[in-house]
Image 1 (cartoon, rainbow over the protein chains, first blue to last red):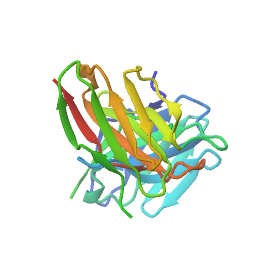
Image 2 (image 1 turned 180 degrees about the vertical axis):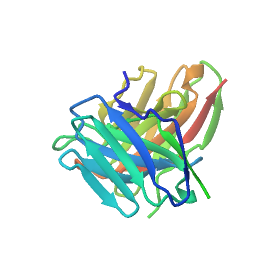
Image 3 (image 1 turned 135 degrees about the horizontal axis):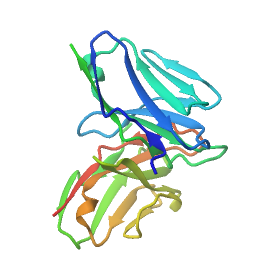
Image 4 (image 1 turned 90 degrees about the vertical axis):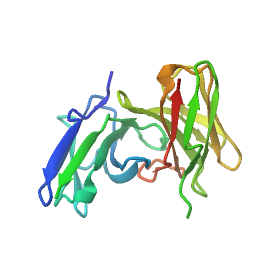
Length: 116
Length: 114
């Protein structure tokens, strides 16, 4: 049973426009969510995170929104740039206090292509 | 500061063999996690080690095992390889504590089982 779902395997966006990547989860115990970006032949790199006590977190061009009632989060990239073309993974954990950093549940990823 | 390194980068084995992968974490990081990435399943958590102890384990068979040394370097072993074990194996390191936004990934080891 997939606890973290990214239903769009791919997304194509024009340079300068907004990219919206979506992620749904089923486990109500998840309280920490992250987005990672992965280029070919490289490991994933951390992009942005959000705790379940917040509904929005912003870092430059990247904003993550969390809707706990819908068990849904989204990553907005504005404006999109060709260098943003990569696979984006959504991840979640049920951390609580003193939890481990290792046990992340990942979605299958969405491949973003930003066209010049 | 040097990043997470994994060796070897590529590996070809045949069914029934066993394989050992190595991961050197960022200096000062005591937690090392291992993930398997396949096209169909995405990234799946294998296990996490902290201070030489396995702290968390994912849903993989006992053929998958690991260990961590006193210098935090970690190895992962897969015995009796199956075709389905072909995947990218990723290692990630982090400092101790409840936050997870400091997990750094290595480039991975691409394992092909023939």
